[in-house]
Picture 1 (cartoon, rainbow, N blue to C red):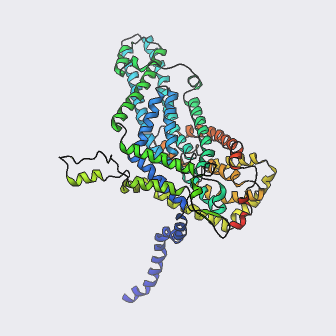
Picture 2 (cartoon, rainbow, N blue to C red):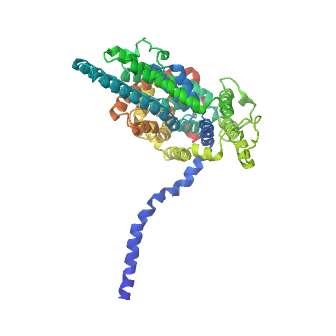
Picture 3 (cartoon, one colour):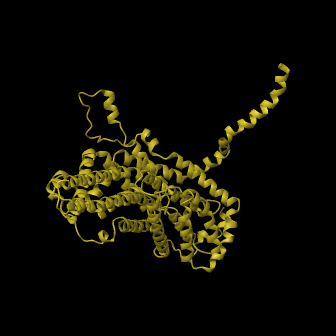
Length: 552
Protein backbone atom coordinates (compact mmCIF):
# COMPACT_ATOMS: atom_id res chain seq x y z
CA UNK A 1 0.00 0.00 0.00
CA UNK A 2 2.84 2.36 0.83
CA UNK A 3 4.50 1.60 -2.51
CA UNK A 4 1.26 2.37 -4.33
CA UNK A 5 1.07 5.72 -2.56
CA UNK A 6 4.62 6.63 -3.57
CA UNK A 7 3.87 5.72 -7.17
CA UNK A 8 0.92 8.12 -7.24
CA UNK A 9 2.86 10.95 -5.64
CA UNK A 10 4.40 12.36 -8.88
CA UNK A 11 1.00 12.41 -10.56
CA UNK A 12 -0.54 14.21 -7.59
CA UNK A 13 2.24 16.79 -7.60
CA UNK A 14 1.79 17.44 -11.32
CA UNK A 15 -1.96 17.90 -10.91
CA UNK A 16 -1.46 20.09 -7.86
CA UNK A 17 1.01 22.35 -9.67
CA UNK A 18 -1.24 22.51 -12.73
CA UNK A 19 -4.26 23.76 -10.79
CA UNK A 20 -2.27 25.78 -8.27
CA UNK A 21 -0.73 27.96 -10.98
CA UNK A 22 -4.02 29.77 -11.52
CA UNK A 23 -3.71 31.31 -8.07
CA UNK A 24 -0.67 33.25 -9.23
CA UNK A 25 -2.09 34.43 -12.55
CA UNK A 26 -2.96 37.83 -11.07
CA UNK A 27 0.71 38.27 -10.11
CA UNK A 28 1.97 38.02 -13.69
CA UNK A 29 1.59 41.77 -14.43
CA UNK A 30 3.95 42.50 -11.53
CA UNK A 31 6.80 41.43 -13.80
CA UNK A 32 6.22 44.67 -15.73
CA UNK A 33 5.89 46.80 -12.59
CA UNK A 34 9.45 48.23 -12.82
CA UNK A 35 8.62 49.70 -16.25
CA UNK A 36 5.53 51.38 -14.80
CA UNK A 37 7.36 52.72 -11.74
CA UNK A 38 10.08 54.23 -13.92
CA UNK A 39 7.44 56.26 -15.75
CA UNK A 40 5.80 57.47 -12.55
CA UNK A 41 9.01 59.23 -11.54
CA UNK A 42 8.56 62.40 -13.59
CA UNK A 43 7.57 66.00 -13.03
CA UNK A 44 4.03 65.52 -14.32
CA UNK A 45 3.17 63.08 -11.56
CA UNK A 46 4.64 65.40 -8.95
CA UNK A 47 2.49 68.16 -10.44
CA UNK A 48 -0.59 65.97 -9.98
CA UNK A 49 0.34 64.89 -6.44
CA UNK A 50 1.00 68.46 -5.29
CA UNK A 51 -2.28 69.69 -6.80
CA UNK A 52 -4.13 66.91 -4.98
CA UNK A 53 -2.50 67.97 -1.71
CA UNK A 54 -3.55 71.59 -2.21
CA UNK A 55 -7.10 70.53 -3.11
CA UNK A 56 -7.11 68.31 -0.03
CA UNK A 57 -6.16 71.30 2.13
CA UNK A 58 -9.13 73.24 0.73
CA UNK A 59 -11.43 70.31 1.44
CA UNK A 60 -10.00 69.80 4.94
CA UNK A 61 -10.78 73.39 5.99
CA UNK A 62 -14.22 73.44 4.24
CA UNK A 63 -13.26 76.20 1.82
CA UNK A 64 -15.06 74.33 -0.97
CA UNK A 65 -18.35 74.35 0.98
CA UNK A 66 -18.09 78.10 1.46
CA UNK A 67 -17.71 78.55 -2.30
CA UNK A 68 -20.85 76.49 -2.94
CA UNK A 69 -22.91 78.33 -0.33
CA UNK A 70 -21.77 81.70 -1.68
CA UNK A 71 -22.91 80.79 -5.20
CA UNK A 72 -26.29 79.49 -4.02
CA UNK A 73 -26.79 82.60 -1.92
CA UNK A 74 -26.24 84.82 -4.96
CA UNK A 75 -28.64 82.93 -7.23
CA UNK A 76 -31.94 83.02 -5.31
CA UNK A 77 -34.88 80.65 -5.70
CA UNK A 78 -35.51 80.54 -9.46
CA UNK A 79 -35.05 76.94 -10.71
CA UNK A 80 -32.93 78.18 -13.62
CA UNK A 81 -30.66 80.10 -11.27
CA UNK A 82 -30.51 77.21 -8.80
CA UNK A 83 -29.21 74.99 -11.59
CA UNK A 84 -26.63 77.63 -12.41
CA UNK A 85 -25.84 78.07 -8.73
CA UNK A 86 -25.00 74.36 -8.47
CA UNK A 87 -23.15 74.14 -11.78
CA UNK A 88 -20.83 77.11 -11.31
CA UNK A 89 -19.21 75.95 -8.04
CA UNK A 90 -19.03 72.37 -9.36
CA UNK A 91 -17.27 73.58 -12.49
CA UNK A 92 -15.00 75.96 -10.58
CA UNK A 93 -13.96 73.39 -7.97
CA UNK A 94 -13.33 70.81 -10.68
CA UNK A 95 -10.77 73.18 -12.21
CA UNK A 96 -8.54 72.53 -9.20
CA UNK A 97 -9.87 69.36 -7.57
CA UNK A 98 -10.50 65.83 -8.76
CA UNK A 99 -13.70 65.47 -10.77
CA UNK A 100 -14.81 62.55 -8.60
CA UNK A 101 -14.14 64.40 -5.33
CA UNK A 102 -16.03 67.43 -6.60
CA UNK A 103 -19.00 65.28 -7.62
CA UNK A 104 -19.11 63.53 -4.25
CA UNK A 105 -19.10 66.90 -2.51
CA UNK A 106 -21.89 68.38 -4.63
CA UNK A 107 -24.03 65.24 -4.47
CA UNK A 108 -24.48 65.68 -0.73
CA UNK A 109 -25.78 69.22 -1.28
CA UNK A 110 -28.04 68.39 -4.23
CA UNK A 111 -29.48 65.34 -2.48
CA UNK A 112 -30.31 67.47 0.55
CA UNK A 113 -32.05 69.99 -1.70
CA UNK A 114 -33.97 67.34 -3.63
CA UNK A 115 -35.02 65.49 -0.48
CA UNK A 116 -36.42 68.74 0.92
CA UNK A 117 -38.30 69.31 -2.33
CA UNK A 118 -39.79 65.81 -2.07
CA UNK A 119 -40.91 66.53 1.49
CA UNK A 120 -42.51 69.83 0.51
CA UNK A 121 -44.26 68.27 -2.48
CA UNK A 122 -45.73 65.56 -0.27
CA UNK A 123 -46.82 68.20 2.24
CA UNK A 124 -48.58 70.17 -0.48
CA UNK A 125 -50.38 67.07 -1.73
CA UNK A 126 -51.27 66.03 1.82
CA UNK A 127 -52.74 69.42 2.64
CA UNK A 128 -54.69 69.52 -0.59
CA UNK A 129 -56.12 66.04 -0.03
CA UNK A 130 -57.19 67.05 3.48
CA UNK A 131 -58.97 70.13 2.14
CA UNK A 132 -60.54 68.24 -0.71
CA UNK A 133 -62.00 65.60 1.63
CA UNK A 134 -64.47 68.18 2.93
CA UNK A 135 -65.18 69.78 -0.44
CA UNK A 136 -67.39 68.74 -3.30
CA UNK A 137 -66.50 65.92 -5.67
CA UNK A 138 -65.84 68.39 -8.48
CA UNK A 139 -63.26 70.24 -6.43
CA UNK A 140 -61.66 66.94 -5.45
CA UNK A 141 -61.34 65.86 -9.06
CA UNK A 142 -59.87 69.23 -10.04
CA UNK A 143 -57.33 69.01 -7.22
CA UNK A 144 -56.22 65.53 -8.33
CA UNK A 145 -55.67 66.75 -11.86
CA UNK A 146 -53.53 69.65 -10.70
CA UNK A 147 -51.24 67.70 -8.35
CA UNK A 148 -49.89 65.21 -10.89
CA UNK A 149 -48.02 67.68 -13.15
CA UNK A 150 -46.56 69.44 -10.09
CA UNK A 151 -44.93 66.22 -8.82
CA UNK A 152 -43.74 65.34 -12.33
CA UNK A 153 -42.19 68.78 -12.71
CA UNK A 154 -40.07 68.43 -9.57
CA UNK A 155 -39.01 64.92 -10.53
CA UNK A 156 -37.74 66.24 -13.85
CA UNK A 157 -36.03 69.08 -12.02
CA UNK A 158 -34.26 66.51 -9.83
CA UNK A 159 -33.03 64.63 -12.89
CA UNK A 160 -31.72 67.82 -14.46
CA UNK A 161 -30.04 68.96 -11.24
CA UNK A 162 -28.32 65.59 -10.82
CA UNK A 163 -27.07 65.55 -14.40
CA UNK A 164 -25.80 69.11 -14.10
CA UNK A 165 -23.41 68.03 -11.33
CA UNK A 166 -21.61 65.25 -13.21
CA UNK A 167 -21.53 67.16 -16.49
CA UNK A 168 -20.15 70.31 -14.85
CA UNK A 169 -17.44 68.29 -13.09
CA UNK A 170 -16.31 66.70 -16.36
CA UNK A 171 -16.46 70.05 -18.13
CA UNK A 172 -14.44 71.84 -15.44
CA UNK A 173 -11.63 69.28 -15.55
CA UNK A 174 -10.59 70.38 -19.03
CA UNK A 175 -10.16 74.04 -18.08
CA UNK A 176 -6.77 73.82 -16.32
CA UNK A 177 -3.63 71.76 -16.74
CA UNK A 178 -4.15 70.02 -13.39
CA UNK A 179 -7.92 69.59 -13.75
CA UNK A 180 -7.79 65.97 -14.90
CA UNK A 181 -5.06 63.33 -15.33
CA UNK A 182 -5.45 63.25 -19.12
CA UNK A 183 -4.27 66.86 -19.36
CA UNK A 184 -1.13 65.99 -17.40
CA UNK A 185 -0.50 62.92 -19.57
CA UNK A 186 -0.59 64.94 -22.79
CA UNK A 187 1.55 67.69 -21.26
CA UNK A 188 4.18 65.13 -20.26
CA UNK A 189 4.16 63.43 -23.67
CA UNK A 190 4.53 66.76 -25.46
CA UNK A 191 7.45 67.69 -23.21
CA UNK A 192 9.15 64.33 -23.74
CA UNK A 193 8.87 64.46 -27.51
CA UNK A 194 9.33 68.15 -28.30
CA UNK A 195 11.05 69.53 -25.22
CA UNK A 196 10.08 72.56 -23.17
CA UNK A 197 10.21 75.05 -26.05
CA UNK A 198 6.65 74.28 -27.19
CA UNK A 199 5.23 77.20 -25.20
CA UNK A 200 2.64 74.96 -23.54
CA UNK A 201 2.36 75.69 -19.82
CA UNK A 202 -0.35 76.30 -17.26
CA UNK A 203 -1.05 79.82 -18.50
CA UNK A 204 -1.24 78.98 -22.21
CA UNK A 205 -3.30 75.86 -21.50
CA UNK A 206 -5.78 77.88 -19.48
CA UNK A 207 -5.93 80.56 -22.17
CA UNK A 208 -6.92 77.87 -24.68
CA UNK A 209 -9.09 75.47 -22.67
CA UNK A 210 -10.77 77.79 -20.15
CA UNK A 211 -13.02 79.62 -22.69
CA UNK A 212 -14.00 76.29 -24.27
CA UNK A 213 -14.83 74.85 -20.87
CA UNK A 214 -16.91 77.91 -19.95
CA UNK A 215 -18.87 77.85 -23.22
CA UNK A 216 -19.58 74.13 -22.82
CA UNK A 217 -20.80 74.83 -19.29
CA UNK A 218 -23.31 77.34 -20.66
CA UNK A 219 -24.39 74.79 -23.27
CA UNK A 220 -24.96 72.25 -20.49
CA UNK A 221 -27.07 74.73 -18.53
CA UNK A 222 -29.13 75.69 -21.59
CA UNK A 223 -29.72 72.07 -22.61
CA UNK A 224 -30.74 70.89 -19.14
CA UNK A 225 -33.08 73.86 -18.67
CA UNK A 226 -34.64 73.19 -22.07
CA UNK A 227 -35.14 69.46 -21.48
CA UNK A 228 -36.06 69.37 -17.79
CA UNK A 229 -37.63 72.77 -17.09
CA UNK A 230 -39.21 73.30 -20.48
CA UNK A 231 -38.88 76.12 -23.01
CA UNK A 232 -41.69 78.09 -21.36
CA UNK A 233 -39.89 78.39 -18.03
CA UNK A 234 -36.46 78.73 -19.66
CA UNK A 235 -37.44 81.84 -21.61
CA UNK A 236 -39.91 83.17 -19.03
CA UNK A 237 -39.19 86.57 -17.50
CA UNK A 238 -41.56 86.00 -14.55
CA UNK A 239 -39.92 86.26 -11.15
CA UNK A 240 -40.96 84.23 -8.13
CA UNK A 241 -42.74 85.97 -5.29
CA UNK A 242 -40.53 87.36 -2.61
CA UNK A 243 -39.46 85.06 0.17
CA UNK A 244 -40.49 87.68 2.65
CA UNK A 245 -44.15 87.00 1.95
CA UNK A 246 -43.90 83.71 3.81
CA UNK A 247 -41.78 82.86 6.79
CA UNK A 248 -42.34 79.12 6.84
CA UNK A 249 -44.04 76.30 4.99
CA UNK A 250 -46.73 76.00 7.64
CA UNK A 251 -47.84 79.60 7.12
CA UNK A 252 -48.06 79.08 3.38
CA UNK A 253 -50.07 75.90 3.66
CA UNK A 254 -52.35 77.31 6.37
CA UNK A 255 -53.16 80.39 4.31
CA UNK A 256 -54.30 78.40 1.27
CA UNK A 257 -57.88 77.26 0.85
CA UNK A 258 -59.28 74.28 -1.00
CA UNK A 259 -60.69 76.35 -3.90
CA UNK A 260 -57.31 77.86 -4.94
CA UNK A 261 -56.44 77.78 -8.62
CA UNK A 262 -53.58 76.05 -10.45
CA UNK A 263 -51.64 79.30 -10.71
CA UNK A 264 -51.76 79.74 -6.97
CA UNK A 265 -50.45 76.22 -6.43
CA UNK A 266 -47.61 76.97 -8.81
CA UNK A 267 -46.81 80.07 -6.74
CA UNK A 268 -46.71 77.94 -3.58
CA UNK A 269 -44.22 75.59 -5.22
CA UNK A 270 -41.99 78.48 -6.28
CA UNK A 271 -42.05 80.05 -2.83
CA UNK A 272 -41.32 76.65 -1.28
CA UNK A 273 -38.27 76.17 -3.50
CA UNK A 274 -36.89 79.57 -2.53
CA UNK A 275 -37.55 78.78 1.12
CA UNK A 276 -35.81 75.39 0.83
CA UNK A 277 -32.69 76.97 -0.63
CA UNK A 278 -32.76 79.68 2.01
CA UNK A 279 -33.03 77.13 4.84
CA UNK A 280 -30.20 75.01 3.44
CA UNK A 281 -27.97 78.08 3.19
CA UNK A 282 -28.79 79.05 6.77
CA UNK A 283 -28.00 75.54 8.05
CA UNK A 284 -24.71 75.37 6.15
CA UNK A 285 -23.68 78.83 7.34
CA UNK A 286 -24.28 77.76 10.93
CA UNK A 287 -22.03 74.74 10.40
CA UNK A 288 -19.12 76.48 8.66
CA UNK A 289 -19.42 79.75 10.61
CA UNK A 290 -17.39 82.79 9.66
CA UNK A 291 -14.27 82.56 7.52
CA UNK A 292 -11.40 81.04 9.49
CA UNK A 293 -7.65 81.55 9.44
CA UNK A 294 -7.20 78.19 7.68
CA UNK A 295 -9.62 79.08 4.89
CA UNK A 296 -7.93 82.43 4.32
CA UNK A 297 -4.50 80.81 4.24
CA UNK A 298 -5.54 78.12 1.75
CA UNK A 299 -7.23 80.73 -0.44
CA UNK A 300 -4.01 82.76 -0.38
CA UNK A 301 -2.02 79.68 -1.39
CA UNK A 302 -4.40 79.03 -4.29
CA UNK A 303 -4.14 82.59 -5.56
CA UNK A 304 -0.36 82.55 -5.16
CA UNK A 305 0.17 79.37 -7.16
CA UNK A 306 -2.12 80.58 -9.96
CA UNK A 307 -0.18 83.85 -10.15
CA UNK A 308 3.11 81.94 -10.24
CA UNK A 309 1.81 79.65 -12.97
CA UNK A 310 0.49 82.41 -15.17
CA UNK A 311 3.45 84.70 -14.52
CA UNK A 312 6.07 82.13 -15.51
CA UNK A 313 5.59 82.67 -19.25
CA UNK A 314 2.57 84.96 -19.77
CA UNK A 315 3.21 85.41 -23.51
CA UNK A 316 6.12 87.70 -22.69
CA UNK A 317 9.27 86.93 -20.66
CA UNK A 318 8.16 86.16 -17.11
CA UNK A 319 9.96 85.20 -13.94
CA UNK A 320 11.25 82.00 -15.61
CA UNK A 321 13.69 84.25 -17.47
CA UNK A 322 15.74 84.47 -14.28
CA UNK A 323 15.83 80.69 -13.78
CA UNK A 324 18.79 78.58 -15.03
CA UNK A 325 18.52 76.46 -18.19
CA UNK A 326 20.73 74.08 -20.16
CA UNK A 327 20.85 72.46 -23.60
CA UNK A 328 21.03 68.67 -23.83
CA UNK A 329 22.64 66.48 -26.48
CA UNK A 330 19.55 66.64 -28.71
CA UNK A 331 19.59 70.42 -28.75
CA UNK A 332 16.58 70.85 -26.50
CA UNK A 333 16.44 73.63 -23.95
CA UNK A 334 15.77 72.17 -20.51
CA UNK A 335 14.31 74.48 -17.88
CA UNK A 336 15.14 73.62 -14.31
CA UNK A 337 11.96 75.34 -13.12
CA UNK A 338 8.57 74.64 -14.71
CA UNK A 339 4.95 74.44 -13.60
CA UNK A 340 5.74 71.69 -11.09
CA UNK A 341 8.01 73.63 -8.75
CA UNK A 342 5.48 76.35 -7.74
CA UNK A 343 2.74 73.86 -6.84
CA UNK A 344 5.21 71.64 -4.95
CA UNK A 345 6.34 74.67 -2.93
CA UNK A 346 2.75 75.66 -2.13
CA UNK A 347 1.81 72.07 -1.24
CA UNK A 348 4.77 71.95 1.14
CA UNK A 349 3.54 75.15 2.78
CA UNK A 350 0.09 73.58 3.18
CA UNK A 351 1.72 70.73 5.12
CA UNK A 352 3.63 73.00 7.52
CA UNK A 353 1.62 76.23 7.96
CA UNK A 354 -0.62 76.31 11.08
CA UNK A 355 -4.33 75.61 10.89
CA UNK A 356 -5.15 78.17 13.61
CA UNK A 357 -4.06 81.78 13.84
CA UNK A 358 -0.60 81.65 15.48
CA UNK A 359 -0.97 85.21 16.80
CA UNK A 360 -4.06 84.34 18.86
CA UNK A 361 -3.10 80.95 20.24
CA UNK A 362 -3.37 80.60 23.99
CA UNK A 363 -3.32 77.57 26.29
CA UNK A 364 -6.68 77.43 28.03
CA UNK A 365 -6.70 76.82 31.81
CA UNK A 366 -8.86 73.70 31.50
CA UNK A 367 -6.73 72.22 28.71
CA UNK A 368 -4.02 69.61 29.10
CA UNK A 369 -0.61 70.52 27.75
CA UNK A 370 -0.61 67.62 25.29
CA UNK A 371 -4.00 68.63 23.89
CA UNK A 372 -2.90 72.26 23.67
CA UNK A 373 0.25 71.38 21.73
CA UNK A 374 -1.76 69.20 19.35
CA UNK A 375 -4.15 72.09 18.70
CA UNK A 376 -1.37 74.66 18.33
CA UNK A 377 0.82 72.51 16.08
CA UNK A 378 -2.04 71.39 13.83
CA UNK A 379 -1.09 72.07 10.16
CA UNK A 380 -3.41 73.10 7.35
CA UNK A 381 -3.21 69.59 5.94
CA UNK A 382 -2.09 66.80 8.30
CA UNK A 383 -0.18 64.02 6.59
CA UNK A 384 -2.84 61.50 7.60
CA UNK A 385 -5.41 63.55 5.66
CA UNK A 386 -3.01 64.09 2.74
CA UNK A 387 -2.66 60.34 2.33
CA UNK A 388 -6.44 59.96 2.15
CA UNK A 389 -7.04 62.89 -0.20
CA UNK A 390 -4.39 61.93 -2.75
CA UNK A 391 -5.48 59.40 -5.38
CA UNK A 392 -2.41 57.16 -5.29
CA UNK A 393 -3.99 54.69 -7.69
CA UNK A 394 -4.24 57.41 -10.32
CA UNK A 395 -0.48 58.00 -10.01
CA UNK A 396 0.15 54.37 -10.98
CA UNK A 397 -2.45 54.71 -13.75
CA UNK A 398 -0.70 57.75 -15.20
CA UNK A 399 2.67 55.99 -15.00
CA UNK A 400 1.20 52.97 -16.74
CA UNK A 401 -0.17 55.30 -19.40
CA UNK A 402 3.28 56.74 -20.03
CA UNK A 403 4.70 53.21 -20.33
CA UNK A 404 1.90 52.26 -22.74
CA UNK A 405 2.60 55.34 -24.83
CA UNK A 406 6.28 54.43 -25.12
CA UNK A 407 5.33 50.90 -26.15
CA UNK A 408 3.07 52.27 -28.89
CA UNK A 409 5.93 54.44 -30.14
CA UNK A 410 8.86 52.05 -29.84
CA UNK A 411 6.97 49.11 -31.35
CA UNK A 412 6.19 51.11 -34.50
CA UNK A 413 2.43 50.88 -33.99
CA UNK A 414 2.04 54.67 -34.10
CA UNK A 415 3.87 54.79 -37.44
CA UNK A 416 1.73 52.05 -38.97
CA UNK A 417 -1.55 53.67 -37.91
CA UNK A 418 -0.44 57.18 -38.92
CA UNK A 419 0.55 55.87 -42.38
CA UNK A 420 -2.95 54.49 -42.83
CA UNK A 421 -4.42 57.89 -41.93
CA UNK A 422 -2.37 59.96 -44.37
CA UNK A 423 -5.35 59.93 -46.73
CA UNK A 424 -6.82 62.67 -44.54
CA UNK A 425 -4.49 65.18 -46.22
CA UNK A 426 -7.18 65.81 -48.84
CA UNK A 427 -9.36 67.36 -46.13
CA UNK A 428 -8.94 70.87 -44.72
CA UNK A 429 -7.47 71.09 -41.20
CA UNK A 430 -10.76 72.08 -39.56
CA UNK A 431 -12.44 68.96 -40.98
CA UNK A 432 -9.63 66.76 -39.64
CA UNK A 433 -9.95 68.40 -36.22
CA UNK A 434 -13.72 67.87 -36.15
CA UNK A 435 -13.48 64.22 -37.23
CA UNK A 436 -10.84 63.59 -34.57
CA UNK A 437 -12.94 65.30 -31.90
CA UNK A 438 -16.04 63.28 -32.76
CA UNK A 439 -14.10 60.03 -32.81
CA UNK A 440 -12.41 60.60 -29.44
CA UNK A 441 -15.53 61.88 -27.69
CA UNK A 442 -17.45 58.70 -28.54
CA UNK A 443 -14.44 56.41 -27.99
CA UNK A 444 -14.01 57.69 -24.43
CA UNK A 445 -17.52 56.46 -23.60
CA UNK A 446 -16.23 52.88 -23.81
CA UNK A 447 -12.49 53.20 -23.10
CA UNK A 448 -10.73 54.86 -20.19
CA UNK A 449 -9.84 58.51 -20.79
CA UNK A 450 -6.21 57.94 -19.83
CA UNK A 451 -5.90 54.89 -22.09
CA UNK A 452 -7.45 56.78 -25.00
CA UNK A 453 -5.01 59.67 -24.63
CA UNK A 454 -1.89 57.57 -24.11
CA UNK A 455 -2.58 55.40 -27.16
CA UNK A 456 -3.74 58.10 -29.57
CA UNK A 457 -1.33 60.93 -28.69
CA UNK A 458 1.82 59.30 -30.19
CA UNK A 459 -0.23 58.48 -33.28
CA UNK A 460 -1.26 62.13 -33.55
CA UNK A 461 2.40 63.19 -33.33
CA UNK A 462 3.28 60.96 -36.28
CA UNK A 463 0.19 61.99 -38.24
CA UNK A 464 0.88 65.70 -37.73
CA UNK A 465 4.41 65.19 -39.04
CA UNK A 466 3.19 63.37 -42.16
CA UNK A 467 0.43 65.91 -42.83
CA UNK A 468 2.84 68.81 -42.17
CA UNK A 469 0.58 70.56 -39.67
CA UNK A 470 1.11 71.87 -36.16
CA UNK A 471 1.04 69.00 -33.61
CA UNK A 472 -1.28 71.02 -31.36
CA UNK A 473 -3.95 70.97 -34.09
CA UNK A 474 -4.53 67.29 -33.38
CA UNK A 475 -3.28 66.86 -29.82
CA UNK A 476 -5.17 69.58 -27.95
CA UNK A 477 -8.64 68.77 -29.40
CA UNK A 478 -7.88 65.13 -28.66
CA UNK A 479 -7.34 65.66 -24.94
CA UNK A 480 -10.37 67.95 -24.60
CA UNK A 481 -12.57 65.46 -26.46
CA UNK A 482 -11.71 62.72 -23.96
CA UNK A 483 -13.39 64.82 -21.25
CA UNK A 484 -16.69 64.89 -23.18
CA UNK A 485 -17.96 61.70 -21.53
CA UNK A 486 -21.63 62.62 -21.19
CA UNK A 487 -23.56 59.61 -22.53
CA UNK A 488 -22.94 56.46 -20.46
CA UNK A 489 -22.74 56.04 -16.67
CA UNK A 490 -19.57 53.94 -16.94
CA UNK A 491 -17.80 56.49 -19.13
CA UNK A 492 -16.41 58.47 -16.20
CA UNK A 493 -16.63 58.31 -12.37
CA UNK A 494 -18.83 61.45 -11.99
CA UNK A 495 -21.48 59.88 -14.24
CA UNK A 496 -21.35 56.64 -12.25
CA UNK A 497 -21.70 58.49 -8.93
CA UNK A 498 -24.80 60.35 -10.10
CA UNK A 499 -26.35 57.29 -11.75
CA UNK A 500 -25.89 55.26 -8.56
CA UNK A 501 -28.19 57.66 -6.67
CA UNK A 502 -31.16 56.33 -8.63
CA UNK A 503 -32.72 59.61 -9.73
CA UNK A 504 -31.38 59.46 -13.29
CA UNK A 505 -32.47 56.82 -15.78
CA UNK A 506 -30.12 55.50 -18.44
CA UNK A 507 -32.36 56.95 -21.15
CA UNK A 508 -32.20 60.41 -19.56
CA UNK A 509 -28.40 60.38 -19.44
CA UNK A 510 -28.06 59.07 -23.00
CA UNK A 511 -30.59 61.53 -24.41
CA UNK A 512 -28.96 64.52 -22.75
CA UNK A 513 -25.42 63.26 -23.35
CA UNK A 514 -25.82 62.83 -27.10
CA UNK A 515 -27.07 66.40 -27.48
CA UNK A 516 -24.27 67.77 -25.30
CA UNK A 517 -21.63 65.73 -27.13
CA UNK A 518 -22.69 67.19 -30.48
CA UNK A 519 -22.66 70.73 -29.10
CA UNK A 520 -19.32 70.31 -27.30
CA UNK A 521 -17.64 68.83 -30.38
CA UNK A 522 -18.51 71.95 -32.34
CA UNK A 523 -17.30 74.22 -29.51
CA UNK A 524 -13.92 72.44 -29.29
CA UNK A 525 -13.44 72.58 -33.06
CA UNK A 526 -14.42 76.24 -33.39
CA UNK A 527 -12.25 77.24 -30.42
CA UNK A 528 -9.23 75.48 -31.90
CA UNK A 529 -9.51 76.97 -35.39
CA UNK A 530 -10.31 80.52 -34.19
CA UNK A 531 -8.43 81.92 -31.21
CA UNK A 532 -6.26 78.79 -30.94
CA UNK A 533 -4.49 79.75 -34.17
CA UNK A 534 -2.95 83.04 -32.95
CA UNK A 535 -2.46 81.65 -29.45
CA UNK A 536 -0.20 78.76 -30.52
CA UNK A 537 0.58 79.67 -34.13
CA UNK A 538 -1.36 76.72 -35.51
CA UNK A 539 -1.22 77.97 -39.10
CA UNK A 540 2.43 76.91 -39.50
CA UNK A 541 4.69 74.05 -38.47
CA UNK A 542 7.07 75.30 -35.74
CA UNK A 543 10.79 74.61 -35.77
CA UNK A 544 10.60 72.42 -32.69
CA UNK A 545 8.17 70.07 -34.48
CA UNK A 546 10.43 69.32 -37.48
CA UNK A 547 11.73 65.75 -37.82
CA UNK A 548 10.07 64.45 -34.70
CA UNK A 549 10.88 60.85 -35.65
CA UNK A 550 14.50 61.54 -34.71
CA UNK A 551 13.47 62.68 -31.26
CA UNK A 552 11.98 59.41 -29.97
